[in-house]
Length: 603
Image (cartoon, rainbow, N blue to C red; front, side, top):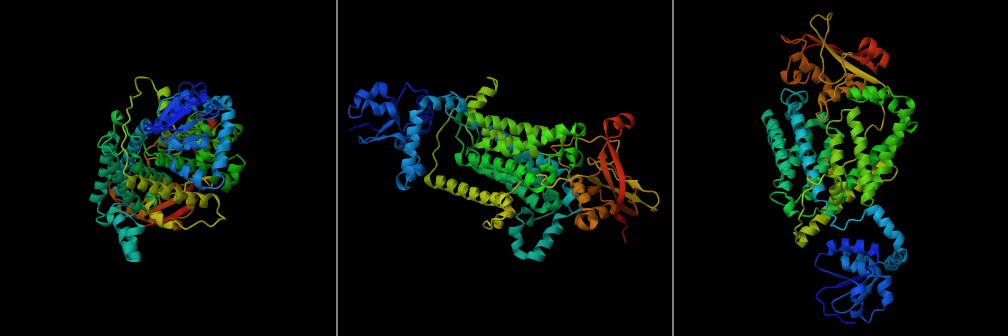
């Protein structure tokens, strides 16, 4: 055999639906590096190849006349370096590959039907440009929510007159740890932690969020957003210690390498996203969802016996009015809901790695769960960020079928090959992130196995473990803060969002997160102010009448002058039933338990 063609030629069976579909996909992958032709048209040009060989497998004819068939032809045509190395260097790999290829070739009608069922019949290029576009806009919107939500609270939480001042915190870190503190607390506020700088970073985050939403220099906007938010989280202490804060940082860090390196992202000059980081995003979504189900099943009996939803709606940090109605549903429905939740968190995540149609079904299931959580609980931007990650499960061809024709943009791909050092850098970073996240995920699932210590990455909060409500709270203690001038008449400080007045309906506040209200829920679970170090700072701020802290509350019962005494009492709250609500108009029933913090005053 001898061919003087300038490119390899892959010859296939045009009468086979299975072959036609995958050849159409391979054309997109190989671009202009390989020619394709059906053997029905070109077999006579290669008399040295038996007709039966063309009928049984694809044939790749190289420029020098060498002929490869079967798995070797496919791997060589697709130019998959790793698999080619395994094929020629790894003992047994070639035999297994060829065996699989022969089995598929002998059962092509079956695999053709499977292909249509799992991948569909489209032949256009499988791309994720629209998915990336939607994800980056969603991420920009979530960053915007996070910065705005924090900005309106930042001074009362960690400002100079706040509950836990950032400037004092950094001074203590510097005194106790020294220069190592710059690494353990990575933040721009080492330069200046004044209130003006807190404002500056929040404002900068809002501005960069709009830049990202507009699609200008996406990687550089994402770098700024990640640095700014990490700086705020690092000094936010308990008020920025939530799983959605680190999830936003991890997703934002991956997005730096996933975003197109363009001055302005546009569909008319679309660059294919990095495959490695696309899979890292899916790996992140899998870890997030599977770990959430795993920790529930492994850690708490009430999840295993399916009774957790009997009290979850009323004991979660900030319930919604819809959650009150969900609480009234029969126990059988609650148990069925727990089973559905476990199915969605433990089984559906595996569809993330499945072919496109199963992956789309998995996306629908995951998004559906997030919508239900949004309706029944206030978890700020956590559910929106999870939904944004789900966008990356849907390819452009699927979006074309889901969206109205007028909303689907015309995408024109352009090739921008990276320098070999750039490709190598992407591979190294992606591999390192996968290994680090795999170690942390493995350590979470298999605690009896000793995994390598990767604590050095922890300060940057960009490779994390997840899992909400591992230990279900079965009762709802609630702190009521009161002030007095004579220790006889006590007036209540009303919070904006957390339960207080039993007649006040649970409020819908997401995607904004009132961080003081959230921490009050955790403080109540601790049972005593001695176990909640920041609580006395909060009480002291009320005694001093600090406006920055009072602004976090719904109203100040002492508008003219701060009270002489402050105390905190502990109540147990429970949702009322339908009968009580109709007759009394009360959403909550509460019962006094004990003093949480005795009356204190300033010296």
